[in-house]
Amino acid sequence: MDLMEKLTVLTDAAKYDVACTSSGVDRGGGGGLGSASRMGICHSFAADGRCISLLKVLQSNACAFDCAYCVNRRSSDVRRASFTPRELADLTIEFYRRNYIEGLFLSSAVVRDADYTCEQMLETLHILRTEYGFRGYIHAKAIPGADRRLLARIGLLADRMSVNIELPSQESLRLLAPDKSRESILTPMGFVKDKIQESCTDVVRYRGAPAFAPAGQSTQMIIGATGESDLQILKLTAALYKKYNLKRVFFSAYIPMVSGSNLPAPGTPPPLLREHRLYQADWLLRFYRFEASELLDERQPFFDPLLDPKCSWALRHLESFPVEVNRADYETLLRVPGIGVRGARRIVAARKSCRLDLDSLKKLGVTVKRARYFILCSGKYYGGNLVHDAILEGLLSGNALKKYREERSGQMTIDDIMREEKQACLVGQM
Image (cartoon, rainbow, N blue to C red; front, side):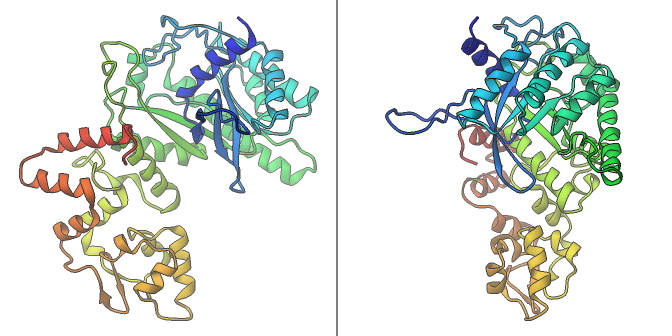
């Protein structure tokens, strides 16, 4: 198998890992300048906000594990390929020199065992950093079960490390990934966290101390392959942030491509709307000071398909609204739908010099269409009636409003709404 065939196989095999922002696309039509080939190109963001193009690839897809949900599992009938460290390092540099990429996202199936796989990845990074002097961004996946000394060396060469938690519970891992365990995943995650903290201390104390994974660590969960509720997933997400200081938890809607008695049938639409709601809730946990128990509970363990989590929370707590924007503190403003982190800061700063009205809020970047149902401006309310159903109809629009009215009249069930919203996500209508 030549190098381009390997690249085709191993970039395609890497597309199911969503620990980067997006994948590339093919741009049709010839005769122009540049290339937007989807082969292995994904995008992430630097700390300063720059969008970085990465070569997203596996070292190998010849996996020794037989995880039921994975297309690269041992028993799957797919083409197998493996890069040597030299091949992958040379390929990365050639892509960089042609200005296709600015960095590398490197993962791998478990070849032979965890230690051998890590050795191959480590050698690739070592060639890039020492022989070529490559200083671009590198995201490397830690292989659960690998020797800590190997993980420590990878962390000194990579900018970010990640350990995929894969499934939200030990029971799911036992059912679908018998070669993995919660302990084998959380142990290296804890090790990476400790090494990052140790490195931060050393960098302060000693000039020139090497940085260990300076961009932190992240993880990924597969959504929809097993029966965990949104509440279970969100509680696990909050616990991971708190215990392991993760930069991001990524959610991946399960795409049914393999048959199995414990999996959704091939052809079942992936739960893209559910994934979207979890990302919205994740944002509320990280930047809006919400707790998982505030957004969902045992009575409502799944997110509303019609409304985003913040609006859903606000509608369940109308006793807390409306709030006066000219007096409410920053934490209270963060909980108002339509007011983001930047908007709340601007409101707190602007009201020191003037009284704010609805037009002022528009100029400050507040989404007034949502916020007006939950705020007062100098004592004036712009939302009509402060009643749950009236506000809900005001927040919805287009197809969502039509479906809500049909559901209320008994013409459509909530399952119908979920099914149609998922399909809308698939065809890009959301």
